[in-house]
Image 1 (cartoon, helix red, strand yellow):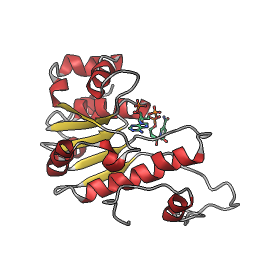
Image 2 (cartoon, helix red, strand yellow):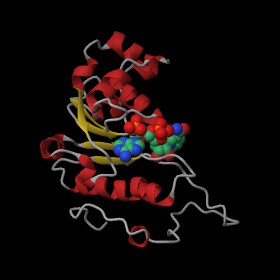
Image 3 (spheres, protein in one colour):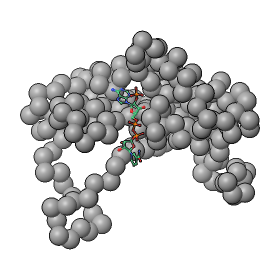
Image 4 (tube, protein in one colour):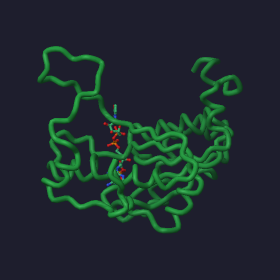
Length: 201
Ligand SMILES: NC(=O)c1ccc[n+]([C@@H]2O[C@H](COP(=O)([O-])OP(=O)(O)OC[C@H]3O[C@@H](n4cnc5c(N)ncnc54)[C@H](OP(=O)(O)O)[C@@H]3O)[C@@H](O)[C@H]2O)c1
């Protein structure tokens, strides 16, 4: 690790997070885990980190998060900031459920306090049944955006995803091409409903 990487006093990125509360989905995943480690290690004044985690295989969201935090990726952080886990607040949820499966209490806490959102929860299986993929990676995103609209102090929403190449084109410009099917049409075609509070975007 370079000296620059550990010098949090001069970085405008790390100071951006001073006293901010962050909401992370997909925290137990490959990307989410290193993301939360990096944010906590390099932004020591970060106020709180809310993580959306679903219960799985007989374990509660809290148990799963506690297990995840024993991963060796957090060893360095544990040495530098032994109480870093105090900043992590587990919100049980599931991106396939209405309002991401969040309780009313957690929803209120998140919308009142969170200013930066990282959305990393997704299915990354390329052969997932289409309906499930769309439910997670399209409807889930839509619900997350609806939640963000209710945040009173939102500064940034970062959607982590995979870059797709338009392999049907012979020339690819630096532009955002329209989807072959509008997302709402896709949702409608698959007969998927989503939370009534999800605003059209
Ligand atoms: N890995 C890479 O090299 C890479 C590179 C570029 C971009 N990305 C993008 O980064 C994002 C995350 O990828 P990843 O590699 O971290 O995937 P991953 O290891 O499979 O993690 C996926 C995360 O999403 C969560 N999740 C899945 N379904 C959920 C649901 N219904 N409700 C709540 N949480 C759910 C998983 O939680 P559970 O633990 O409960 O399953 C896990 O935390 C994806 O959009 C991917 O395309 C990844």
